[in-house]
Length: 269
Image (cartoon, helix red, strand yellow):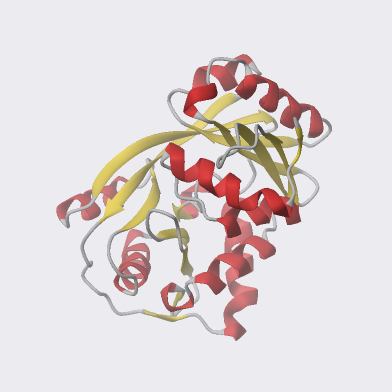
């Protein structure tokens, strides 16, 4: 195992694609800039295995990208990499992650506990537009960062600015300043999120605006606590692809999950 470097980004992205995940090199680079990543490397086109974390202030870190190439599984790599991440974050108030069903029992053995769930949705069709939202402007950023900090519970300006810059045509804010939506590109298609809005009407307007600004199909990670949005997406052709469970080691994750209409993605929280 060794620290990942910028030179590894193409092969880290190749590992993501091989496993069927959506990350591109720019996603991976955020971990190197805002956290750390570890790699196991045998010189092939895709890395053998990886793990990473990103820090959001002093009290919260997000563990993700615990990936193992299919031909190298069942050799203990994932467990070893997770132990590195947990040990690296010793002293951090909360280390969190978003687990697949397969990963959940592994993380539970390491002391993580379940908090709440969400599901990845495919949005193959445009959604009905609604009034009350407009495109994000530079002057809106203080409001966006305040909304996200209230919902997520920790500062992550670097992440949000990076995401919004990648697909600026899909960045929207509620006209009354009560919510926002941004999106980013992905290897398998664009992803909408985070979306912050306390009420479903505002959330629907923001999600529809972002979705309709994107070509092809998009994905969105919707908390299970927003059944009204789930019903709305289902009736308009949305399909659930896979579930995730938010888990934490140490303190519970901060913030107010009820404000979250779409998470940034399991890699970023």
